[in-house]
Image (cartoon, rainbow, N blue to C red; front, side):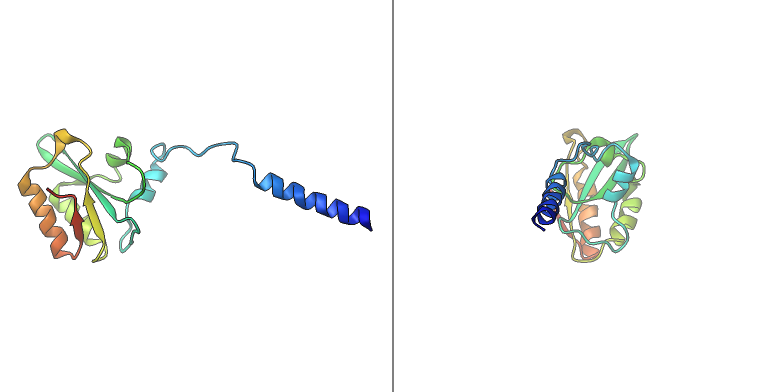
Amino acid sequence: MIKKISLILMMCLFILASACQANASPAAPAAQGSADVENLIPKPGEKSMKGFELYSWQENGEWYFSVLIGTNRQKTDAEIHAPAATLRGLTGLQKMLRSIPAGETVSMVFHDPANIPPDDIVAKVQNMCTQLGLDMTGAR
């Protein structure tokens, strides 16, 4: 009987010890795959504990935006500029902002000092957020 109990106890200890080992293959960084970027793009009606991050940049005289779910880390350029996340102009941005529930926070993140939108663009974004009941932070 003692041998059976000892054997069961050893098996339990082995299972516990093997469950506590570190993962041998670390996860790839979030910027590696498009599926990871898809997880950062808000779905219609989705709320976020950390709010939403709004990025902007200019290409060929036109403003582009991306709205990503807030996290505790800085987003990579690949995530910010991912085709699936890219919104063209204020019209594209407004469509995305309409899908975010009122009361959520949208933080304007200026990740590239050379690409900060002019005051009139920032004011239009602020106005959109206000009209949609979104709390915008980070605007100048």
